[in-house]
Length: 220
Ligand code: CA
Image 1 (cartoon, rainbow, N blue to C red):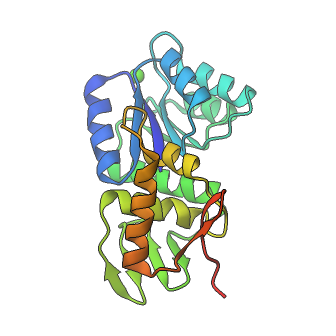
Image 2 (image 1 turned 180 degrees about the horizontal axis):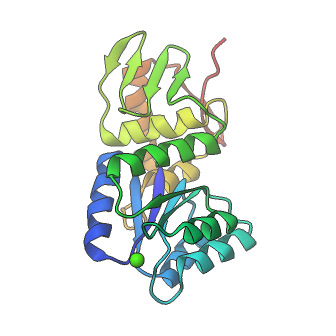
């Protein structure tokens, strides 16, 4: 999963970026409203964390422009404490959830997980596919009850596919959603990670759909 983090306070931004990366997200960051508008309009994100008080262009305007362009990525806004009118204006502008500053990062992560799940019509935090289970709260992956050790990249790939189980996901889509903008992207790496996941979870867990991409094979 790839997220856009929009926050003008450098220290908070750096801290949140670290937390998000530790939780398995690929993170792009923007420090002002114009950069946020540009990135959010041109790059595909699975979710966006948007501070409302931003230089150059305020967060509310950025959000309104995204939504008027038809951009439907889930957006979690960061609002000033006790500012109920900011929350109302933000949700009316198209935000999916909000958090008032200061907040606990655990709450941010939980809300983000829920936004990503619900964007794919998944209500439960436990993603199940055949005999594979991914607990989105802890990141734990188990197969027939036994825990499976995955590297961060393997985990991100599996999580992306499990959020889209049954759908065909192209290699270019995977690259766009698994890596941050500044990452040196190489389409071969996707093949490498798919091969590793097949070794760990069973050769038939991920289907190659010729010329189109990959798919988690729906259970028979
Ligand atoms: Ca701010």
